[in-house]
Image (cartoon, rainbow, N blue to C red):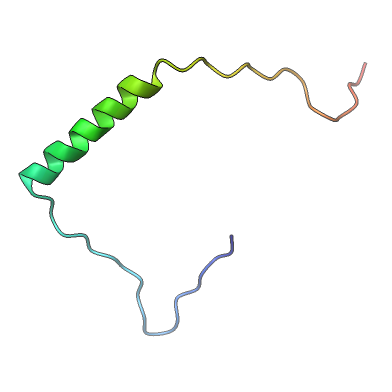
Length: 57
């Protein structure tokens, strides 16, 4: 993915609107459910050494 340069005289600043209480609660509930669902997944095995590279003695 490349770097996007701003044209002269143009700022790419995005201002989000404030969330309502209902939206805040909905987002919080979604995050809580996501964490509960995904915390039960097994951990990935840890890598040891380098893949595809010759090990030096």
